[in-house]
Length: 75
Image 1 (spheres, rainbow, N blue to C red):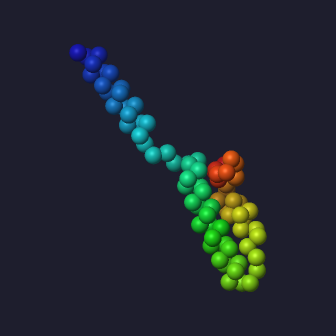
Image 2 (cartoon, rainbow, N blue to C red):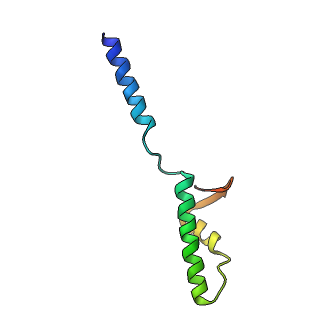
Image 3 (tube, rainbow, N blue to C red):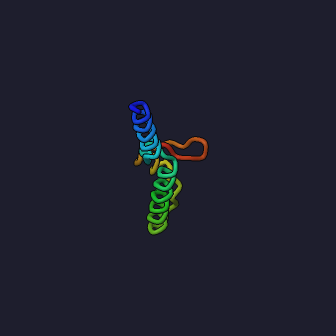
C-alpha cells in the first residue's frame, strides 16, 4: 500500500512539473516582442520621415535577442 502512495505522489509531482509554463527562451514570446518593437521603431521612423532600416538590429540589441532558425531567442 505504501508503494502505491509513493508512486502516486511521484506521478503527481511529475505531471505538475511537466505542465508548468516555461519562461525565458520561448521563441513565441521573443518573436512577439520583436514584432512589437520593430513596429514601434518603424512607425517612429516614418513619423520623422526617415527609413526604419535599423529597426531589427536596434530591437535585437535592446532586448538582448538573436535570430536563429526563423525565431528570436534571448542570450
